[in-house]
Amino acid sequence: MGWPITELRLAFAWTCDACGRDNFERGVHRELTAEQLRDRYADAPVDVVTGHELTPPGRVACPHCGAVFKAVTMGQDLGHDSA
Image (cartoon, rainbow, N blue to C red):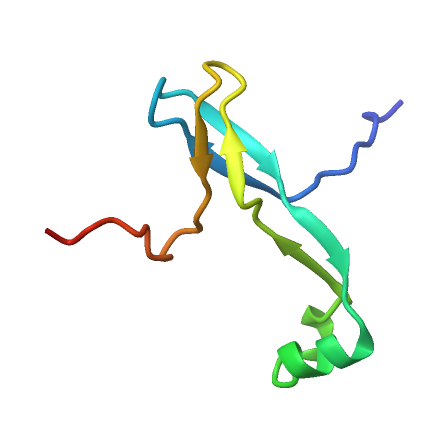
């Protein structure tokens, strides 16, 4: 008899700056219209275009300590003062 099968979903990993615990958040999933697909993925290989988009949540809350943070993706400006 084989192993049971489960479906993996994409998620965003982050570490809480307040308590140091690692956390995972599901992305916001939505279907794209045909026009949105053309506009966003005109140059993408056909096998990459699925008609679905996964975006990160705008804020996250740590389930361990309750701290809440604005969520940004890697490489995105953190909005800190440069001084």
